[in-house]
Length: 270
Image (cartoon, rainbow, N blue to C red; front, side, top):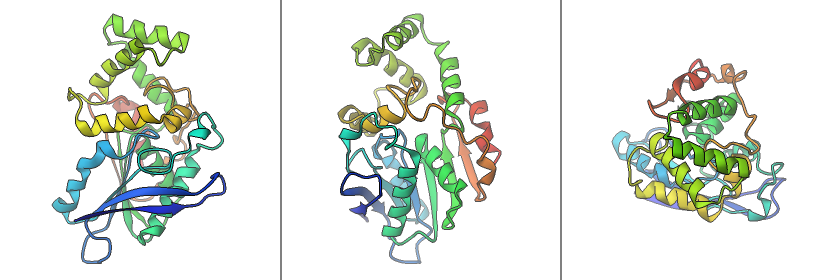
């Protein structure tokens, strides 16, 4: 069984009414099911779509699984007029949104989090703040520092065919991020280090379409691509704070992931 809804969200920084879209697989209303797992998508601003297969954890482990679109993307409220407003799009806004969703669904006292990429960064920040209802945390393919993330991506870029890397360098220098050649070169990198299944699965294409339709959050906080990080997160780091995570934490990283293992090792020390 599944159900979807919208959680009203108010925050002092918001210019108007906002809602967070969510979908639940399993039953949150009974204590006979296991602790709910909330899935935090990447980006920021990517949407839940590419993680939709995690709904299968609900039937496999008999737990409720909740996916949601963070503010500014997917089926949640968009604020396109806030594009490039780095004072508005800050991690604290998304922490408050997650807090609100947990309260809205009545599970703020007992839940687990699984965050992928930016979602893992968000989950780690959430845990560092000591939210009492959080019992376990899974961090998947996430950096502990954007500086280290970019260093890792640059290491992978050295292995790209010369024509791809030259195209990336040319358009980064000229800031012509909308040029078809730049988009082609970015996709070639993604085929090697984001998703090695090609053609890309439909769920991932749906996520990419989210950003293509509205890149407000992604461009403002991250930048034009996974490795051209010029947004407000470019100096983000929790290297000196991961010791504050007190709940059991599983760290996942793949052989070909953008953030190579030694670049996420600081998180694994929690």
